[in-house]
Image (cartoon, rainbow, N blue to C red; front, side):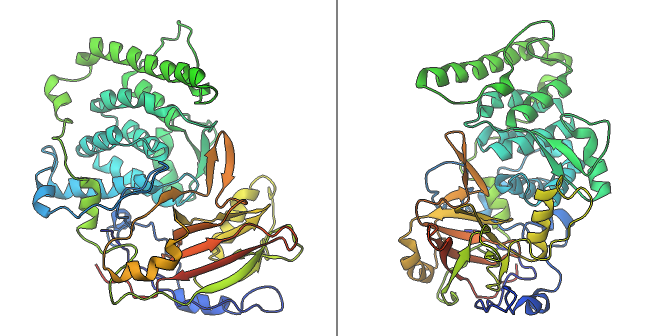
Length: 475
C-alpha cells in the first residue's frame, strides 16, 4: 500500500487544453482560483510537523532496471518489534519518515524540502543514527547514499563509520557523474547546513556543495575520523575519477579499486576504533534483522495509497494534444498536466543581471511559477519536478480494470529528469519509441501518460494522458 498526501491541488479539476491567440491556455487564471497557494507534494508533515506527509509508494522504487513488486502492508505488531532501543518510538518513526524522503529524492528537485529533511535529522541527532545506518546498509541508490552520508557527517556520530566503510564499493558509478551545487534560498536553512558541506567555499552564496556518493562517503569518513586512506604521504588512485566503464576486464579492475579502498579503511578502523568508541556504543547501531521494510511501513500505516484504487475511484477523460519542440518559433512546447495549459517556452520569463549565468535555474523557476510539468526540446521531452515510473505500454489499456480491483498498483522503474546509459545522457523520454509512465506532479496531481516520438516533419510529439479525479481521502 502507499501513502497519499492531502494538500492544495491534490484533486485538480482537470480542464482540456483550450488555446488562446497568444499560444497559452485560457485556463491560466482559473488555475490560480483552483489552487490558491501552490503546495509542493514533497513537503512532509515530516518537515513542518503540521503539513501532511510525503507521498509514499507501494515499494521503494530504485534505479534498478527491473519492475518493482508490491508488498503487503505489515502489521503494527511487526513494526513495534523493530523499534531501536536508544530512542523513543515516536522519534524512530519520525526518523523513518524522513528517511523515506531520501529514497525518492533527486538532486535539483525539491531542494528546500531535501534540506529541511536533513536539518530535522541533524536536530534529532544520535537517536537517528541506527536507522540511518540500517538504510545505508540496505540501499544502492546513489542519491539516497549521498543524502545519508551528508546527514551522518553532520550529526557527527562515529558509530556510523563502519557503515560508511561498507558503503564504499557501492559508490562506483556507471557514468561520469560530478559533484554539484544545490541552491537553497532560505538563508537560515542554508546557514544551518553550510558547515556540513564536504567542501566549504570561502564565499557564501545561495549554493552549497553536494557530492556524488563517493565524495560524500569519503568526506564523511575523513571528517568523522580525522584520518585519510591512503594517508597524505602515500600515493594512490583518485577514486572519484574512476567510473564503471569499458570492457568486462576493465570494470573488474575498477570494482577492485573500490574494494581495495574499503579494505584499507576497514583495516585502519579495526586497529583504531577504540580511540573513538566503546564496544557497547558500536553494538547500539546493530539493529535486529528485519523481515519487513520498516521505513515504508512506518509511513504507510498512517496514510492511504498514492495512486488510489477501488470501485469508487475514477479516472478523468483522455486528453490528447501535440507538443511542439522549443525550436519551433512560438511553438507551444510546455504542458501543465492539471489544466491542460500549453505555453510557449520561456514566454514572459524575466531577464536580468547574470541572466546567462543562472539560465538553468531561471528556467526551472519559470516552469514552477507557471505549474508546467513537461518541456519538449531537441527531439526529447523532459519533466520539471515530475516524479514518474516507466511501465509497459499495454497498461494504458488495462489501467481502468486494474483500479477496480482495489489492490496497490505495481510501479515500474523509477524515472528521473535525466537518466544515463553507457555514459551518455538520456532525456526523460527517448526520441526513438513511445513511453508510458505513471506520474506525480509538483501539485500532487497523479496520472498516466503516453508520449510518442517526435514527428520529424511537424517537429511535434503526440501526447495523451488521463488523471485521477477522486478527492484525496484525509489521513
